[in-house]
Every structure is written in structure tokens, then in C-alpha cells.
Length: 267
Image (tube, rainbow, N blue to C red; front, side, top):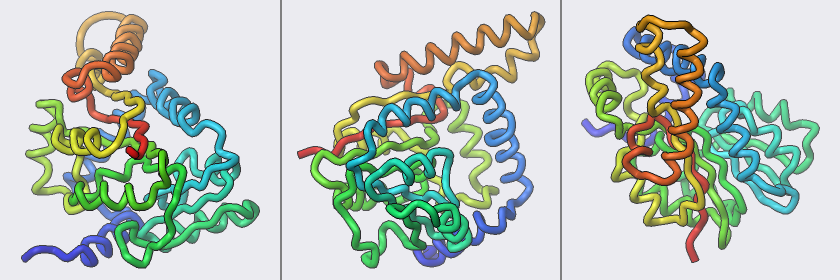
């Protein structure tokens, strides 16, 4: 039986509020949120991403900002809220939005709402910036998502996204094996090549960077003989190569695990 969008949204809300995961999902989360996040922090990958997003924000003082799927606020939500002309954070979770609303009490130009981005009840539009950190891959209907994003942006409006890729062969194989057991599989759709090219066709991709290309192999590098210092230096060089080459070469980008993009609405 085909699952309804309402059913999926309700289960997605419950999943993020309760944090209940089955054993395979906990193992994958340990790898993704544990080992990989430690690598990202230790090698400066995470900092590079946030610094890049800050530079992409530019001067927010005249911008109307939508923080899409923000739950209780991501790492840059408060920066957006405090520095933009107006800020709206939306999410399916009343728990997450309740927490964010409490954080925004002293920010008069900012508010948070529980609402489905694709719903006809969400009527606000003309956003200068839509910030979607780890969000766009939750939508299975990419065409519908792109249509809605275009509806909500003002002319020349921008989107900043950050999402997982499923284009590296070893990662695709691992995800394929894991997917039947995945607790959140109904709303987890890492970008394929086709997905990326749909966004490229619909928007002007002003800039892009991908991470965790070569350095996703760092855990294996640690198994080899040699000093830890030399291995870290090697991994930092890998990250710089991932960072620079992914901006220029599609095939290199597709060898990485995560992609961030600055996209602009076409005329």
C-alpha cells in the first residue's frame, strides 16, 4: 500500500521528536553522525562549510529569510534570525518549533511556525533567501519541491542547501544494503546524479562544494602503518582537493558524500 504524505509526515515528526531508531539505523547513525562528524570537525571540514554559508549569506539586513526544516534551529539559525530583515523558521515538529520559538523571543523580526512546506496552507512567499541545511533530500518528489521553491523565491532569490549524495559507488552500495532496514527510509532520498541535474536545470548554481570524497577513506588510512600526524596531514590535503576539485568537475563532485550549493532563481 502506498504511504500517504500525511502518514509519512506524521512518522517523520515522531521520529525526530523521539529519536527512536532501530539497530541498523543506530549503526548507520554512529558511522554518519559519529565517525564522519568527528572527521569533519578534526579536519576543519565542518568549519569550512559554515564559513562558506556565512559568506554566501552576505548582508542580511534587507533580506527576508526562510529557514526550511530547521527543527529547533540549526547551527546558523540564530545568526539568520538576528541579522535578517525578517526571519521565518518552519518545520513539521511542534516540539522543535516550540524550542526555537523560545530562543527567538527577544528577536522581534523572527518567528517560527509548524507547517508543511508543500502545503497549500503555507502561503508566505517572496523570500530573498531559503536556507535548507540537510533538508532538500527529505523530499522524494524533486520536481514538486523545485516548483515550490521557485514559487516561494522572489526574483533573483537564492537557496543555500547542504545534502548527502548517493553518487559514489561504494556509498551507494552500502546505502542499498542498509535501506531495507532503515527507520527513516521514507523521507531519506540522498541526491542522485539525476537529482543534481534537475536542480542545475531549474536554478543557476552560483557556486558548489562537495566534501567527504577522498577523506571518507580516512578510517581505512588509520589501519595502515605510519604516524598519526602524517595521516592527518594527508587527510587535510585530501579535503582541500575535495573542496577545490568538486567546484569544477562533476565526476569529482559525485565521488563525494555531501554537497552544498548556492542556487539562484532564474529569470
